[in-house]
Length: 362
Ligand SMILES: [Zn+2]
Image (spheres, rainbow, N blue to C red):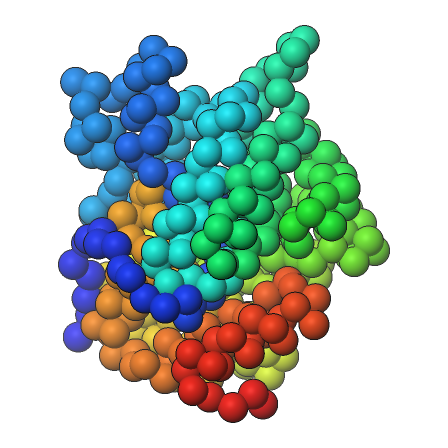
């Protein structure tokens, strides 16, 4: 029986703070109602007739496409936030409210501040201003909603000019909630069989430097790109976690090594279908394989603004594929154990989770 997919549905869930999420793009989790309001205020173009329904239609996906199609909605949403520190602080706070109302106790939110900066001009907010506004919103939300939020900064494939500055920000803001480095973007180009290097020299150097500075590292790999991306993310970039990683299953030797080394895979079920990373005619979704094989994996929502899903809907989807509550609880425990928190803070979050699950600390 092929993998089932009924398309996303978005309903807010009220649950005790009992979940952890490691792979969510902050700028892909903004309320469309806020984007619409900001566009109206600023006189920015809106798709279709300019209604909020048309904006939702342009940004949210319900049918599988490809990664470029998946990301195309951002062109309608990013301008509303670009260069606006007041808006950034607001959406950061709103993000915390949504996280809490979805029962998420611990979240690592990722984004690239450089994508939300206007071209350098006197008086315009810098990438640091954008990040600081976001961190202010996060820390207000954290205190107000009793959640724990940390930030990962993303380099973007094809945007190498910002990489060094993103690394600088990871270092500068490490005491203000920034816990790691990521590289995101379309890896479809890596499917050229003749291509040997999945990451360019610049990215390898940035990751080397991050490792030297003891900055934690995750890498989007093996989502739409081949297993070789996962291999090189681990061995060239020294990634400590893999974003998605589904196509690791195409290389059994590598997969067995990942199982043995407890490599953490941040799986994102709905987005993996919508981006075409996991076709719906396969028998087993990679998340199911990871769960059955006892891999170190977590379940994440990636971009709720595009998928229309939060964790509850992701859980519903994986349940429809046969995962049970034990797999889901294990995914949450895995997430905290593989989080980029320091050991003592990890222990505090784990203890809270175990209390909710009525489990003993191991
Ligand atoms: Zn992602």
